[in-house]
Image (cartoon, each protein chain N blue to C red):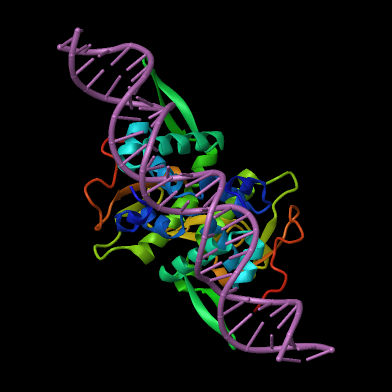
Length: 160
Length: 160
DNA sequence: GGGGTTCAGTTCCAAATTAGAACCTTGACA
DNA sequence: TGTCAAGGTTCTAATTTGGAACTGAACCCC
C-alpha cells in the first residue's frame, strides 16, 4: 500500500497517520505546541533538511493542522500556527511525551515538566472516560464496529 | 539529522518518535490493540510489504514494545504480543483515534466505537490532570525545563 | 550604491529507504 | 510425491531523504 493511499482508508488511525505519521511531522508539532512558529526556528531546533521542512509544513497546512499567516509585509514573511484541528492534537502529543517520560527517559529524569495552571500543580496526563470520568485502562476497552465501519475493520477471529 | 540519531535526543517526544514515528508502526500497533498477533494477519490487514513488516516487528521487539512468543513448536511459529511498555501506548492510540474520529471521519460516521466495560458506556477519551482530575486543555498547560533538560530544550524567545 | 544580513524558501545530486514481486524453509497433510 | 501454510528473506526498481549550495526580496550600514 502506498503512503498517500492511507487517507482513503476507513480507519481513523489510518487517516490520522496519513497526516501525522511521520518522523518529522510529530517533532514539528511538538515545537508548534512550544510556540515555535517560523521556518528558521523549526529548522534550527530540529536540524531538519530545509526542503523536507518546507514539504512537511506545506502538507500540514493542506491538512488544516497549521495555517500559514503573514506576519510582515515587506519582505513578505509567513509563520505557521496551529489551527483548532492542530490544537486538538494536544492529547496525542501529551500522551506521547508521557510515554517517553516513563519508558525512554535518561538517567537524569524527565526533560520537561507540565504545569496545570488551573489547579497550579505539575501533573501527568491521564486518559479518562468521558462518561464516568475514571481512568481508562486498555483492558477495560472493548471495540465494536461503528456506523462508518466496513466489513473488515475488525479482525475476523479474535484470539483471546 | 539522521533518523537513527533521534533516540539520543533528550526530548521525550523525540525518543518516542524514534520508536513509533513511522507510518506503518502506528498501524501495526493499532492492530496489536485489536489483538492481531501474527505475521500473516498483519500483512493481510495492512497490505504492507512483507520485508518492511518483518523489519518493523523486529524493531518493535528490540524497543521492548512487542515480544516475540513461540506459539507452536513444529514447525516453530511465533506471534507478537504487546508488552507492558506496548500496552502503555494505549492512550496515544486512543487519542489518535479520537482525533481521527473528530477531524477526519467520513460522512458515514466513525468506523469504531469504544466501550468502557467498567461503566458500561460507549465513551470518548478525555485527557485529564493527574492532580485535579479535570480535563486538560492545551491553553492551561505551561511547560518548564525538568531535571533532565539540556539548555536548549525550550525555544529561546517565546512569541506570545 | 556596494556589501553584508535575515528569512523563507528552492534546486541539485548522492545515499538510504520502500514497494512489489518472487523465492525459501520447515513441517503437516493426503 | 505433491501441495499447503506460516513466517520469513532476497532481488530490483522507484521513491524519499540528507546535505549542501543557491535564490530572491528587502533591510541596514557605511
